[in-house]
Length: 412
Image 1: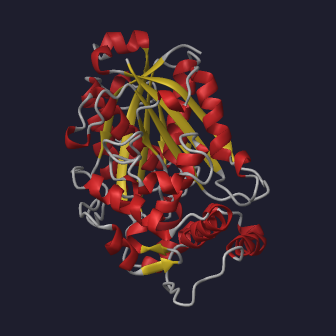
Image 2 (image 1 turned 120 degrees about the vertical axis):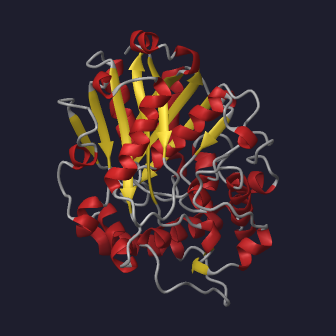
Image 3 (image 1 turned 180 degrees about the horizontal axis):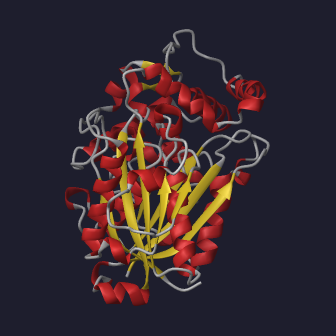
């Protein structure tokens, strides 16, 4: 594999955009990524396009990338349509990296776009059911219920009637971790308050309101122990990255702001024992990425991880090797993952606050980290950031994510 570089990134704001089409979002992000690299559409040799819900919500089951980017000057460049639940955008980046690293192409555009906001909220929530094996649904939910039962609900526990099935899944993960390690709701609230505080400085974030820990704990319950500010919202948005060989980056004059992809590891989850947390797919993907790059977690300066709930960040801070299993919650409560802390997590505000348009999320993380490594993140800047990690997971297989991608980026 030859060296690969991200030379341009683009991202729409994440939020609720009822009057903007999926094509409008995708085109805006792609155009911004090309402009950032001073590249023209005709120089793009292939496109990896990520989307999850357009088939279920709009009926566009096929050729989603071709339809979304039609008439944008890409001509006959092949489009590879990618779906991997919430890990779809990182999967598109993984594919672009493989294409360029193998020498098949010199310039590949990865785009992720999603339209999730619609008048029929129940229909939007129901679409999440397609990200677990529908033929094993009853078996899967029964197994998750057994994980939940490791911890008794307090007498005052309340849950919302309407929410995504994945909030129930995360609640099972939470309660299992709480039973194993003593993780607390307050520690989850500390993560949520931290990420909402970070998002105040992110103009592309869906929400830009700071919360105290007490406000997070007192907020509307979703699926115990999770409250609304601990959970990612329903979002529209798109993000893109232009991946090039070194020779192509030099031809574009883009090396001065280029970011090297040191590793991009994608794995599928498996049917492990819930208590064998050291076999978690994200942990295995991280070990593979570190080994490929010849570095370790101690070398990383900033992380964007998949915090579809606040607990997700606690878990991933452990699976990625930054803290021992069981220590992620206390570390977050001590401020170690805040801006200015030992290892800043989600300076963008994370999925909880920046938003989670699922087909775009992984590339949204990359947009943030490229800005961090270029020193262009403004009030969110991690001083001296040189190496960054993105972790993007999606779907459910057994009792863990069906897909996880860990990407390591380095300032060129």
